[in-house]
Length: 290
Image 1 (cartoon, helix red, strand yellow):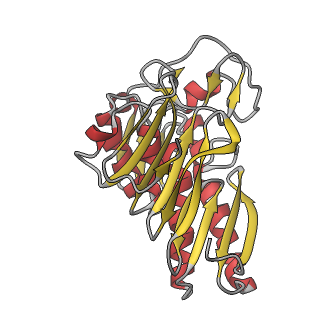
Image 2: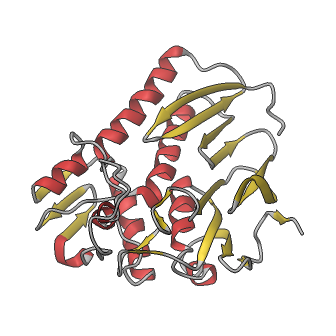
């Protein structure tokens, strides 16, 4: 990487590790602003906090105003909900809790898999306003970390920081002078790479069934129509103009072939399947090792 002498700002946020690398140290006031942005995002969108806006929606149906980022987030989820036949849905929170991945982190299923409720039957998402006719537990994890990457990038750019790398535990956005080389982690061996890719302005996000694994074959990528973990794809990578889009499409690839998603979205992609095979877009910028 051509940024070995850059400065790192590392912190924990939304349950994961973050590292922001810049050519010069960030001033304390900007660091505080970034941390405040992370805290606000968590207070709005976390399903693991009893004081979040999402928790309010889960307890009491009604009309709730969310921050500005809710509008593009809702529109993206709506498109992917339709493209995947309901398999990818922001209403997957209750299904994850049923299998033990809830605020209590019991990691023990409370019953058989629970399909997510049909979006159109319980939730109206209009711009920044969400209206629920019944208690509903949102989980925006498929796109939320990427969205927060974009929000932090906007804070840096507003402060005049033009070159930076944001690493949200593997979801990356690079605005550096020249390409940044990144290894693609082997889905079954974190110490091994299956390839590499050079980032040059676009966001790279990944999703893998070997992350957040518990119980007997349970993991966090669930099919909303069944409430069950996906068994075919094991890892995906996407590159797109925003981290929110790349993050969401990395999950969508578990349900829909990349070529089909490219009919609607501008991105490149790689999917690795459980039988060891791989598929990727013609313009995928990475190199796979033999």
